[in-house]
Image 1 (cartoon, rainbow, N blue to C red):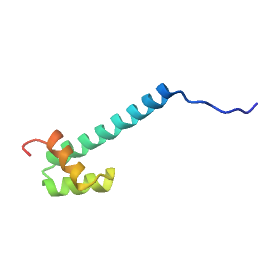
Image 2 (image 1 turned 90 degrees about the vertical axis):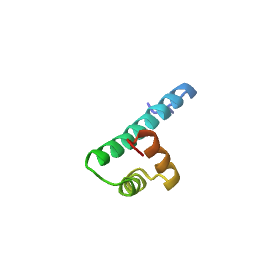
Image 3 (image 1 turned 180 degrees about the vertical axis):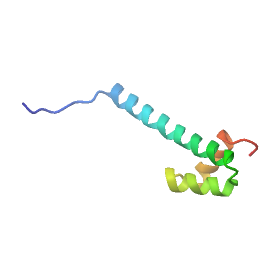
Image 4 (image 1 turned 180 degrees about the horizontal axis):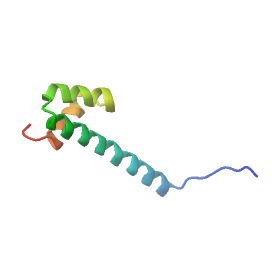
Length: 70
């Protein structure tokens, strides 16, 4: 028997929160691993833009937030 699955508003918010948390974890990992490997900030910013699809401004903000000695 087929039917329509109805997603509640709270379920939508939870799903969005989980998705956002995963994205931020990926961003933080790219920054930390790049710095551990000795990459310069320009290369890390490029990776954030290519791998996560961030704008340069957002990538720079995350680098300042999660990076060391930026």
